[in-house]
Amino acid sequence: MNTAVLWRGARLFTLAGNGPWGAVPDGAMVTEGDTLRWVGPLAELPQPLRAAVGAEHDLQGACVTPGLIDCHTHLVYGGERAAEFEQRLQGASYEEIARAGGGIRSTVRATREASDEALLASATRRARELMADGVTTLEVKSGYGLAAEHEARCLRVARRLGQVLPLSVRTTYLAAHAVPPEYEGRPDDYVDALIGWLPALHAEGLVDAVDGFCDRIGFTREQTRRIFEAARALGLPVKLHAEQLSDQNGAALAAEFKAMSCDHLEHLNEAGVRAMAAAGTVAVLLPGAYYFLRDTTLPPVQALREHGVPIAIATDHNPGSSPALSLQLMLHMACTLFRLTPEEALRGVTVHAARALGLRDRGQLAAGQRADFVVWDLDHPRELAYWFGRNACRQVVQGGQVVRPDESAT
Ligand code: NIG
Ligand code: FE
Image (cartoon, rainbow, N blue to C red):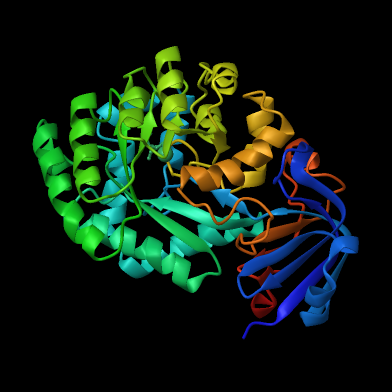
């Protein structure tokens, strides 16, 4: 049987309920195993539960939020693209580089050449950096293998990450990221191929969701539709890189398939916003890619708000458009660049990020949720969006276990 553990002396920002931040000033939580059993003001802790507590932690008035969820990353890849960054600084555009065989395709070459061990080692390093920032759940996409064997390797590495680290990992199949050289000029044949690889990957338990890149340098709506139909036939949920570089009406298509999320969305139109609202699809905004590509078209944040589309924020960590390794920095940038409020930004990396991954058991501090939370060296969580380049994370609890500071690492 799991011992009940009391965490008291917390200023809780639960993000549950209707009040601002779900604040509970003299807060306490009781965890049992990996679950939150009770959350509320210490004075209201029921006596029988108090009596069952086997261990206690005094958080001494520290500010506590749910564990952060990075719901969009491309963490598994070989190499890096700093030289491409230099090319872009000299005037080449992201699209020009991609069309000339660089961009995603150059990372595909490096990924195919890397051993499984090398891919796991580099992804582990990056995951640890995100975890040091308070991340307890991480989504990882494939999409730099683009061949049956290499997509499988990348997804296995992603799964492995969740086994070697105290981290929940969700995997997304993104073989529809770019057309690989073997299929040059034959994108429809490639779409047939990647649809053909999916059942075996799914049977191996490697796929939690299916994604695509619907854009001028990605895949058309028709190709995306075929991929979504294949996902639906297997009962897999979908998401989409939509309206990043141009408006393809991809979000409306994704909404037809009840997509869990549409991501990027700088060029999203009003009809797309409405379709997402009707389907309950989350808008995942990615300020890192917007910033790093020096984009100037803002996602339609006000329209998303007005139509009640939940907004999530993620790093989009990848070597080409967002080599970002701090979700806290994304909170700041979501506010400065996209004008989110600090509370919207925090909801975007907790409760709405969970929803973008189809997870109902996390994102808030409430009884029955996973015991994933972060203790911050801050007076108020609005400071998460205020400071930048500062890591204010004091302690991370993942599945009821203290994982940071990591005593095994010292
Ligand atoms: O989310 N837009 C497509 N995929 C990535 C970039 C991938 C890359 O440049 O390697 C993104 O921005
Ligand atoms: Fe992405």
